[in-house]
Image 1: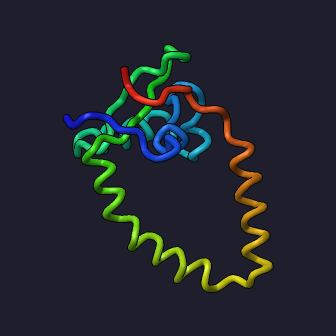
Image 2: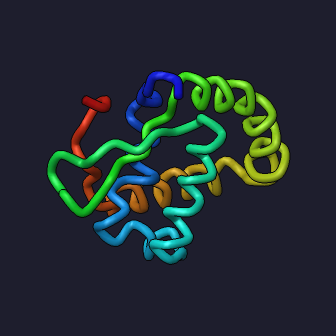
Amino acid sequence: MGSARSAPDNASDTFWGSLGNGKAGRVRSSRSRLSHAVARLEERGWVERVECPTDRRGQVAHLTETGFGVLEEAAPAHVEAVHTFVVDRLTPEQIAQLEVIGQAILDGLAPRCPTDSPA
C-alpha cells in the first residue's frame, strides 16, 4: 500500500475520525457500515487505517498518496458541479447565510483524534 499522507488540514481525520467514538451515528450510518466503507477505500489503496493514539477503541483513516491523487483529480469536476447546482442558484444574501450555517456546523463537530500522520 502507498505511504499515508494527510489531506490539507487533515480533512480525512475530520470526516472519518475515530470509528469507536460515535462518528458513525453522526454520518447517519452504522459503525459496521462505516467500517465497511473504509475497508472498500482501503482495498482501492485510497486510505489506510492507523490506531488513534488517544482512543484505543478507534482508528483514523488517512489518505494515501494514491487516494490524494484521486481526490485531486476529482476536485475540479466536483467544484464545478457545486457551483452549477448550488452556488450559482443562490443570492449573495443566501451565500452569507450558508457561510454562517456552515461555520455553526463546523463549530459543533466533535474534536478528532489528534494525529498528523501515522506512526
